[in-house]
Length: 188
Image 1 (cartoon, rainbow, N blue to C red):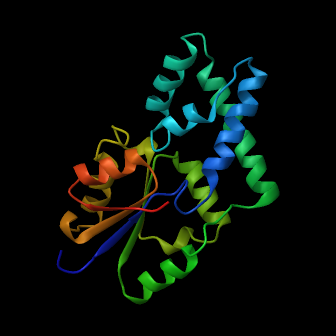
Image 2 (cartoon, helix red, strand yellow):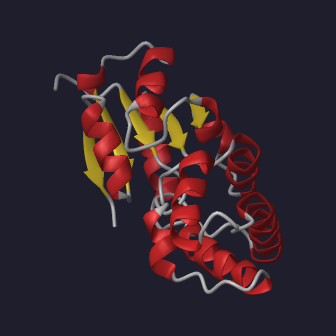
């Protein structure tokens, strides 16, 4: 690696402690529909887009599971939680973004979350305008662990993958970054 030209950030679980909210939301909504949704199932879908997430839920709960209706309610639950409590920003995010800005290093978000929700959370956290590019899960053909989302970011920002790093908190994200030829850094 010559010089880092781009840092790509995952969003949920990395910048924001929203994984916890998503687990609670899926569990609460599951109860409404008569399903016991363990945290392990929600953890299994971290980093996946909605199409891949649906496959996992149907595998665990059967083809009768009302995924799209439950997902819609889960999103509403998460929105209400964030509106009431704010976006749970992880420690060090603002400082890292400022540091990268001072060093003139490009910054991008590559999240499996759909654009409307991603922009809402980034805006509420006050960081939407800190990024040079945002690519969301509903804008690429294949979900993490496939490299599509990271390759899209690199191409759109005209960077060389070998001079980029990805900050991720999920196994699917680490696999995707590696498959894209980008150095992944696991942040727990």
